[in-house]
Structures are given as structure tokens and as C-alpha cells.
Amino acid sequence: MSGPDAGAPPRLEIDRAGRATITLARPRQRNRLQRDDLLELQAHFEALARPGAARVLVLAAHGSSFCAGYNLDELGRDDQSAARDPRLFEQTVERLEALPLPSIARLHAGLYGGATDLALACDLRIGTPATELRMPAARLGLHFYASGLRRFVTRLGLGPAKRMFLLGQTWSAEQLLAAGYLDELVPAEALDARIDALAAELAANAPLAVCGMKASLDEIARGEYALPRLHAREAACAASADLREGLAAFAARRMPRFGGH
Image (cartoon, rainbow, N blue to C red; front, side, top):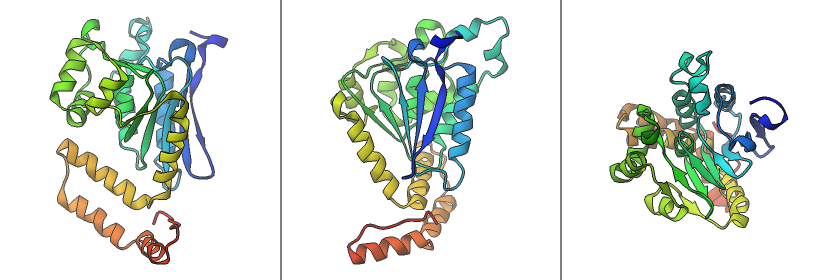
């Protein structure tokens, strides 16, 4: 769809406190992601992966849905745009998961299809009673991509993953909280305040330690960790100016001022 109702590609904003916000902005299409949107997201992730670009990312959306996943209309287009990049959606989600800064998904409403994995690739997911999830792959005849299946199994367990993918049922916010998909469930009117508080807390911590432990935890969850790599991250933090600042701030009973090195 083109024209004034088509919305806009995801936009990136970074404030002075180091908080980055990526906003999905096609509300009339329930924020379905087109090929160009995925390329824009990858460009944003590349920018955020640069040293010092930001300290925390919030993934948000406008409209009545958080995101309806990939725009399936593109699967049948004559130009075969989806066929040109069969792993484009998967690669986009993988780049989000691999970001060297913590991320929060602001889930104000429903998410469907591939969007469920996009949010799961974030480090924290905060929802409201309007949050719901549905994975319709089996009803569409699609086999979900490998890294997404791995993420669901390692983060939620085999049982919840099978129920989500094989049944294709709608999960309520309460069910998502119980399954561990949501980290917190808050009233809609409290969502932004909670996101702000978590983002500020993450941004205030030592970036080198946060990013290193995030990478190590994800590697352990995937069964892909190597002790020498984890020990190298330990050593980097032990020798860092951030550790010296953290210890000095603790001794002086003041807030630390971390530089990320």
C-alpha cells in the first residue's frame, strides 16, 4: 500500500540520556513489516551496534496492534521481493538479539506471527492487559525459521513453544506472563512510566558489564558458549575504568558515572 494511509518505515530516535527508541509506524496496517521496513530496521540496528551509540533500546509501536508480523501480501507479489531475501526477517530478528545493548519491548497490544519472535529477541518484554499473542504459521502452511524456534524453546521451554506453534491459539496477557513470555504485566496507563523506569535503570548500569553479560547469557541459553570467551569478558570488566568508578561510587555512596570502557 502506498499513499497517506501507508504509514512510515520504523523510525529511530536517541535522547541525551542514551535511550534509543525504535517505533513501528504503520498503524493502519497493524504495523505489518514490509521488506523495506526490515531493511530499515537492520540499518537502525547497525547504527546502534556502534560503540557509544546508545545504552538501552526500547522497541515500540503506534496503533491498535503492536505488530502483525511480516506482510504476507509480499509472498505473492509478481516481483517475488520476498523470494529475493528468504531469510530477511530471520536475519533482522537475529541482529536485534545480537545488539550489544539491552532492549525492552513495549507491548501495548497484540502481536502476531513473526512479531512474536521480534519481541522475544528483546531482553525484556513489558505488556498490558491488551497484549495478546498468536502464532498462525501452522494454519498458513508455513514452517517457522530455525532460529525463531530455538529462541522460543530456549526462552520458554518446549511445552509452551509446542502449544504456541502447533495449536495456533491466541494467548492472553495473563497466559503470556505465566509462560514467561512477558516479564511484567502492568495497567495500560502505567506502561510508559514502567518502561521509562526500566530504561533509566539499564542505562545507569555499567555498559561493558551489561553488554558482556547479555552476550554471555544468550550464548549459554543457546548452548554455544565457550569459557575462554566468557573469561575474556570477565577480564575486560575487571580491568575497566567502569569497575574502578563503580567501586569508588559505592564507597562514596553516590551514583556512578560510567563511561563504557
